[in-house]
Length: 231
Length: 163
Image (tube, rainbow over all chains, first blue to last red; front, side):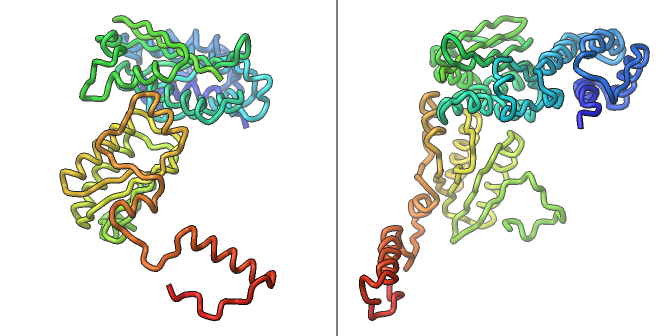
């Protein structure tokens, strides 16, 4: 039942930036000159389509949001590279075919609460499939949840990449990136002396405390957090 | 049904149920709670407290697989608001992994009473089961029944329900 999943995904991304009708028109207008059909579009054609979509969406998308759209489209290719027919559905069910999949990083777009929920479920499922114990899986899922929430609340969304590592030691690395305005007073937040009324700050400090390795880079153009939980 | 007099004919399935029981409210949380659901829950619970004048509330989180700092903040805020209205809140059913994770993150849930399970939570609020069998007496009962069936002892002469 993979009919049109790739185009559905593309539509899903486009719809965050324009109306559904506009998204359909843009996609059709992009696919036709490329002699591709929305029904049979696969992951292989994705890079070509995304390249063509960038000029096509120009009239519909606010210039300020264009980098975001580009990032989200690119992230689709990252998700689609998972070598499984299921991957196109953005639902990398880890239970079957795990032996071939677990070496691959997977990227999740986080823009809405549903995305965040999806990302943390995926993080836990991946951790479980790698043989993580209950507490370890709980740590990973909770940390992903905290980072996803920060991305949604303070950066207008971002991406979360889950990277399973088997050697030299078994661990799950998570890389969260956004193009937000950065975390103010990061030093104080991480030292634990900062307590905001909105609850901001506790999240990233919590991630630091849960992680076995933690690194954060933040600035006016975005934030990257990378952490590892050893399994 | 916690809202029998609700004017809305269609019940919103994403709403978390709030069960009035013996003057208390029971709030079972399950699965994956979205922020929108959590916000809705707070206002629903506080409204129900006012409507039912519940003296206490037990929030059962045994069905939650993930509790993060945000959900903790929501629960703490809910408990604090309920306290302002004169209602005690007991949080129960936290799993070991969730407890360890929250502890590692430094989240203490200050100001929220906790109990192991729903039974302990209710008894903290002063709800006592009268005449109910405790787990231990139930075990004895089962043992006796087993012995009886094996013919080890004779059935007790008196009726069993003289608690």
